[in-house]
Figure 1 (spheres, each protein chain N blue to C red):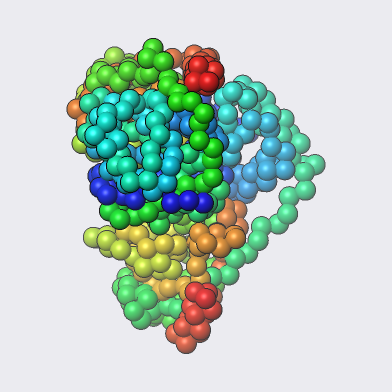
Figure 2 (cartoon, helix red, strand yellow; figure 1 turned 90 degrees about the vertical axis):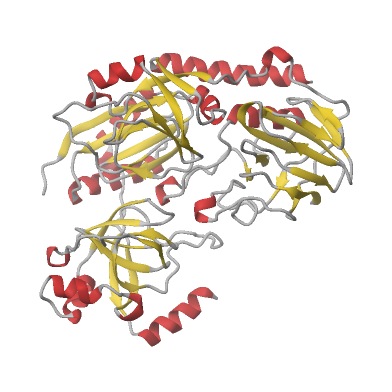
Length: 235
Length: 314
């Protein structure tokens, strides 16, 4: 689906510390590319008084200090920045590779997903790991990526009853979404595998492996490879 | 780094917090930090601490602490009985405690949360630039969790005051069970017409579901325009955003919320967020419609109040 991109940004007031800038009205890769570009441009030319900004599916929320700037001034600065976009060098998105041990105890629902679509388990692994995903935004739990690009042949409804605790590293499917749980949390996604990577680690100098705007690929690994990588990652 | 105090009784929900963790919301880390920035900043001003020094945030019933090194203490926020050994102490003022002293903060009389500042500020590891505890993800604070009996907290180096200080009576906020919150319409104001009018003219009761994530209110059902979608594409929420789920019962979102997909009818101005922090289940809330200019003026006024507090405290 395309065509949801607005001709010019639409502004919404989120109180005296937030300005919401919408660039479109759909979950769409073209709109999200625009968000990534604007977020990088904002990072390179931050208007004064900004505390932080959060790129989302189709908008950027700018959080500011009302003692230092105001919404009207920020609107003008965002509009000006958008007009200069062509002159700001934007690096290509990074691709993050996430190794996954599919099936077995790590992916208790992989057979259900396969059966639902008349596929073999190997088909599910192949289709899930051949696709390239776009990281639309991060949220829900620390480092949790909302991914676009799950092939339609794997779209599967959520579990009837969510699990109270999904282990960290679990890779799952919910409707048209796929994702990976950075920390143990409740969740209702169909689990198909697990990564040994620590997607989020508060002790690490760079706590997050994935950021909004990245591309993401899953790479199938064996149980032995999982164990070896897990040991290396936990050390 | 010195041992500051040992927890004898933790109280039901006591955590280490500071001004908040900023710059990581794009990675799904909510700002956390104290709910009542005014009382928090006043406590640090009284003690002469750096602006972002960490404090204890208590909820309804305060803790009992055994003091382990000589320190000045300020308790601000909710009105509660404070005793050092058997000696009653005033809120919004400083007093000195010595090793072996027992500080007790009892159940609140007015308000909901107290802030306890000690000389130098509480010393727990900085995680992503902040000492604030995000309990749900076990980040920051003391081992990422609520304080428990036996925990020993340290404090950073700081100078004892040469003379005790207090906030003048007339500058101490009064917390009433009838609360007016100024709120700017939006961000999704165009999703409501009659619902918006009803929202600003009705009273709401704070429900039992009121915590650092948000305050769920009970009152008349606030409905969106029929033609508008019931949910929006998920976006991060900011403290003060008033979300209206399909059941029409508003939720004031606070500092531990990450993303949400329901419309936000209005946003409580930042100068009035301390009033939400001090609200308890059963309290009555009315929203007062203001525009952005009013909100900016209120933010400036609160900042000036804190500056004058420092002036008076000296």
